[in-house]
Image 1: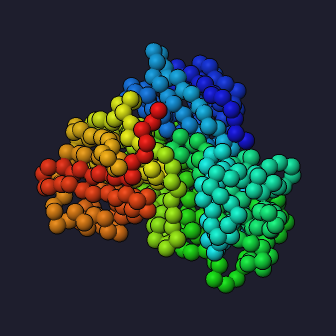
Image 2: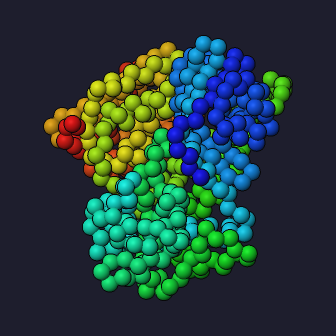
Image 3: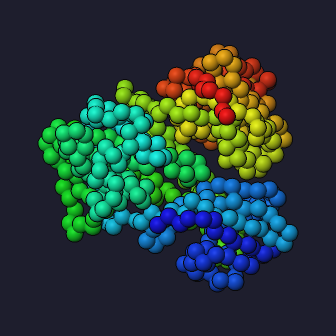
Length: 457
């Protein structure tokens, strides 16, 4: 379950626990460590060592796997005299689904892939948009007022929303005629783990011929049969479902071996584990890109219209990739805290674009060079500029880089060749674009433009 308030941990010079809140000590015990021994949770130990080695503040999300649930949280590690101080927030426990619910989980994917009206809410569960099935809903209407069964009580929809869990094929009555609607939705979170709202689909029960999908919140003793016909989920969704959890565990276990938490191992074995973790992350990146690729290539793909700040997004992207840049001796110059570039777009997608553009700059820049992030508004256009000192891109190749799987023949760096294609499609879906200005030997300058918003107060 989510925990409120920050949790604290202080480690000594040899990663021994000097003080810790009870929840952190619980994780330590589950990992087989003593309350006053070395930190035994590999993900926490890795962040602490990184902060100490680089002597900078490290902030990032963590996923800690357990026997019965996964814990998602945000950690900030700060080097201090004699050790490292760590603060934890946005703690969320996500229970593992029993094997008997695999059929229900697959049916859940079918629910989101099936035809239906798309809807989206903000963090206060107010509708941002709704499709034809919810024609009685206007932007700004409260989800709980539209579907009273979601406001409390024992209804599974209320329980799922309160816990920020996905829900699939749940029926609720809404509208002036108390129409029966089948609702499916996924919670959305930003890079900090903060709740952004829900995105989902809605179908009238008459349209779906009352094909009610199993409730994944209730344990079933036998596997449920899957619907047949054209509603079987597409390849990308099934690939995402099949690979994400195993890859997460492969990466976590490889990092544990590499960090030698359980004791010393040969150096070449630790290097093998590092290679496995890197390969796992590359596959996870490919899974993410394939899922995005299928979403944006659909004719009905839409994005939310939110007030965002491109300068804030640039600072967040710099924070997320600061460690990777420091490992290569790169310096990222991000907009200052008092700089703003208000725009209209979807926060999550704009941050995704910024991270991709900055990640490419980190990947292709020579060591000991500088990457510049600039955000500004000019008339009705807000822009985010990512400029590097890399080897540049020839004029004849500058449109090819936006094609699927295009890497300009480079095999010396990681990447899927999908990032720029996806980023430009996302930018254009938000009524913006991505352009490039580059020449061989003169670095590259990518510019994300979006419609400008009003000046922040």
